[in-house]
Image 1 (cartoon, rainbow, N blue to C red):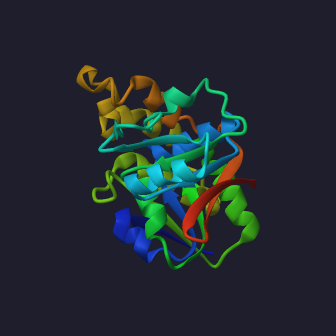
Image 2 (cartoon, one colour):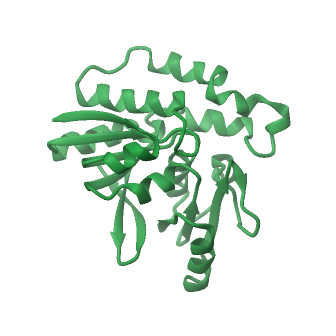
Image 3 (cartoon, rainbow, N blue to C red):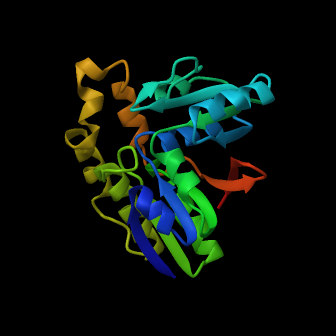
Length: 230
């Protein structure tokens, strides 16, 4: 098994084999929490207008997402895991659009399979991949808006790679905590509290607390993110 670590939107376009599109802060951590809350289905959408169009097609669905971190006007929720932590989403479909992670999913066109990636379910992702044993694994660290590398996504990619290679990172928890002084510092800035609540940071660095894997497939003209297990 060849494991490659790629970066941002360009990396998503290069991804082959099994592609894991990683967005720790916050898109794909959030999707794990959505499924923990009983969500029936997640539909990732690249565009805002596309998201509103999906609402007209699916009565009772929930719109969640952001641009530059901020909740989109007219949406039900932003991209914040703490908003979903205590929701009951049983039977609900969530339409989800973000500036980085979902754009990465949409950019992957040459992979055999697409998974979302986060620290929340990293071990489950590694177990799922090891079971399927693909020839190539592309770990795509999406970074900020898909254009700038960020420490949390790079760390998650490195961690998943280490699990696939039977050499788990001994300092993963220490490095995850250090993220608060790196890209994660925005969650501790009082001026950003409405957009980046501190609780989101702690939810996003929780490691291996969800045993599900989120697989993304193209169905007709849209993406669907379905829950599977390792």
